[in-house]
Amino acid sequence: MTSDYFLFLNIVGVAFFAISGALLGHNKNINGFGIVVVGAMTAVGGGTIRDLLLGKPIFWVVVSDYLFVVYLAILATILFIRYMPSPASFYFIVMDAIGLAVFNIVGIEKALIEGTGMLVAITMGLTTGIFGGLMRDVVCREVPLVMRGDLYASACLAGGLTYALLFAVDIDYAWCIVGSLFVTVFLRVGSVYWNWHIDLFHKRTHKKRMFLKDKPFARAGNEFTRAKKVIGSDHEGE
Image (cartoon, rainbow, N blue to C red; front, side):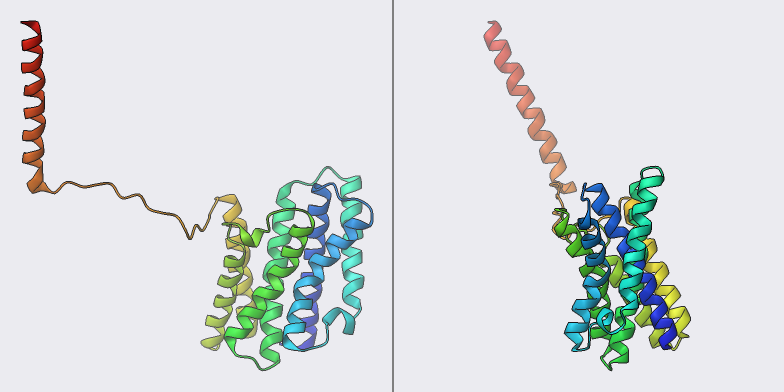
């Protein structure tokens, strides 16, 4: 991936995550500078942890243009909320899904550029995608989306695996990105729309089944019980 594409994807990711942070902050009645804190934390949190793990300079410190994009996106969100009808939760879901998908790709690409294997790259994609949202949810006193049964980290992982599969069969970079974006966004938005969940600890209830050879004995037992009841009622009548 060229540096221009990488810069573009990073800008798109921080913008959408900044918007999602500001929207959730508004829904939680956070006001004033708190909106900026939540939006900025969402936008740069995951990428910051990724760069620390990779031992690289933090991306928004090296290129301060990312901070300009973050603050501009938060300001645009504030103006939208002030002068437009109250935004529905649908906007938050879409913005968060796009930010998740884009940052997943950015994390994978940056790890591969640094010479890591694909497994580490997928892990860096997960880190970049989910940790900003995790910080945002904790600050807003929400159960983090990644900790619920919704397809959040799972959607991110599926997008990363899609990228790895297309990469392994030597598909062009552009299609690797498009495929990963589509899978992540589709699964994330679809999980909300169609109420898809993953319940790892769901216990299946097993009904006791009676074998065919036991059924005649069961019927005979029931008839014997009914006969006893009839005889008992006859004796009471006498």
